[in-house]
Image (cartoon, rainbow, N blue to C red; front, side, top):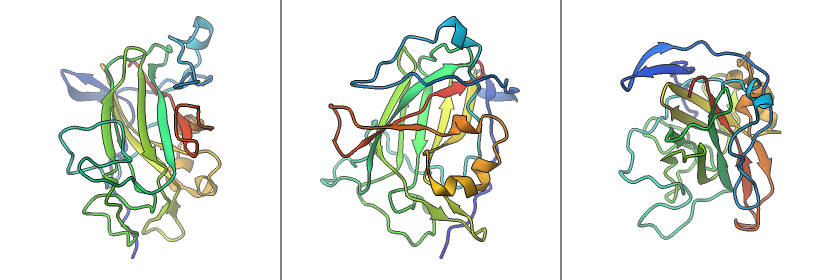
Length: 243
């Protein structure tokens, strides 16, 4: 049995007024330059120099998807590998997901709300509508939220999600993370992909991105001394139009 394909609404950056989505903001398309993030042995510079400020493209928007969490715990920390009250740890490859929320000028966005949701290592979501026969993980809920700090930084500890089939013939979704990011002006719904995945080249959603497709793909780095030696650091800046 395979999962049904969702009919999420395609969302790109949207301008917010008084907390409500008011209008779609056209996305400027400029040259993307470098990523400046990290933790432990990785440095977070305060902002890009003026020469780089001309080069940031907004992160491309994608569909919400059918498995946005309907049940959320009241307190959400940044560690998805454990569930409060349960002694175990989530199965799978630990990743430290980190980056900054920026505007196209390279300025950090303080206090942006960053929501993350994802499938478990077997490719199944903790969602009542997910009919994938892959097993659930009792030690993984697959959702977290936090606010970016004064330098626009965010960080989650989670696991690399598994691939999963859709109801479209021959379409298996590659490992990916879902994000909803709400800044002071813009709201972005998007998905982040891992580099080097064979399924990336066949994914209908990723390949449908006509502008800044590279902006949807993270960088993966070896672990630093302050994290698990078998883990990986996944680096991905999120660029909003106005912030």
